[in-house]
Image (cartoon, rainbow, N blue to C red; front, side, top):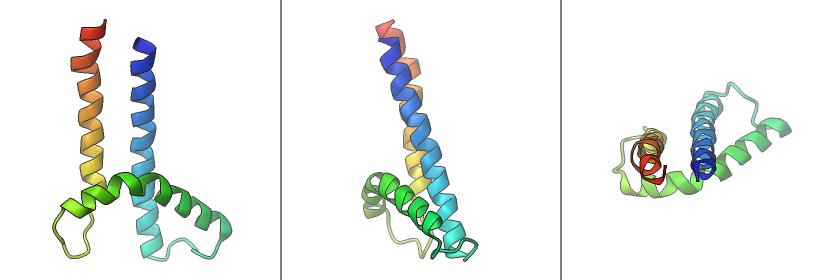
Length: 96
């Protein structure tokens, strides 16, 4: 059972970094630091968008309009942090 908990924790950790990478990429794209016409840059951006958007979209729908400031990645990171802490402080001791 501990292997399953560690696998879930690792998947949440990888997703954590994908959300951070997606936020950084969106800033680089918005400020024209990266060339959007480059095929590699475009495929990285598409991958990050497709991986993170299904989790970010419901959060964006719940948040009020903040005038161009998107805090949905921060909220999702807090949710992932909460889930990881819940996993190791509440669920793991019961199963072990």
